[in-house]
Image (tube, rainbow over all chains, first blue to last red; front, side, top):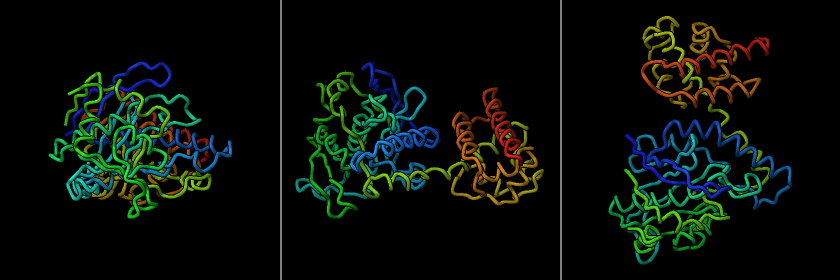
Amino acid sequence: MSFLSTVFLKRGDSGEKVVAELCDAIEPVDIIDWATHWLPARDQCLNILQAANAPPEAYPQSAHWNWMDKTRSMQGLLALQGLSIRCEGRTQGLMRIDLASEQCQLESQRSQPMVYVDYIEIAPWNWIGPYFNPPRFRWAGQILLRAAVEISLDQAFKGRIGLHSLPQASSFYRRCGLTDCGPDPNYPRNLPYFEATPEQAMAFLNQGGSK
Amino acid sequence: MKFNIPASWYEAVDKFDEGVTVGAGGLAGHASPELAAQHAHVGRDDGRIAFYQFVTLARRGRGMSVEELASEADIDLGELLAMEQHDSHFIPDTRSVYQLANVFSVSRPKLMALAGLTRPKDDDVIGEAMKFAARSVSVQTLSDAERAILEGYVSLLNEKAKLGGD
């Protein structure tokens, strides 16, 4: 059984706060939404970039992800959990986390358990780029990352989280206060690895003086 | 798990995603026009979800149990159950899809394409069918809304079939 929580997204054009729901699961409705709405929007982005002869670095680095496969591979595995954010009848962001397979790499907390963010992606119309300018909604990334931290606390991992960032997204995780551990030689294509200590996790949660 | 995010938090983290991309996970290769073209097919084989959705809706629309449909279509009950579980990994038997098309009076070639057994002549069929699937919900009785979705499926499958000369 999945739980829904009320959250807010920010409209990219007007700045208006809009009610959204955070689901602690990826459900069939999200996958169908991905197939019927995310993929055409992604194709639209790619077509625009191709028509403009955009350089390789301008291409979205998550364009090849298949959330149907990612969700399928979670079935029957208790360690893997999905989360989704929905707003105005559309899935706006998806995340898959792993509660068991990865351990911390930072020296101060080496080998401690953590929540590892396997994948996090926001809907193509929320991407930054020349395709949907401004993005339709913002804040989905922060909310999903916060959810990962809260689940880490719930699992008694003290808020510790880790992830391999897409190179295009590294500045987002720096802004969120995670430690940039640099390129990971043990990860395919040496993606930059980020990790949060309990102190960094609490600082992220307590932004705005909350909690 | 429920989440309760304080109102002040949103404003405090407002700038974090301003002008930057959000994403973490595997990077398959250097993004490029070639890669974009290579990945353009991702998700295109997923019309099978719509096929299973159609089978469920069409069966319920006729007030039939799974056993009754298996009997009328003369297909294996286990196979029909696998379809109704909407497992897109499961590949239905060609004969079963043929039989179901007959029972539901829809285009056999189009239903074959939707089930992923043949390459569709018209990709729009898959896309449109997926939209119908997206609008459906899983409930025990077929509501007016679901009946409209089912009628949309049938119309799509038959209309496209006529246009395609099936």
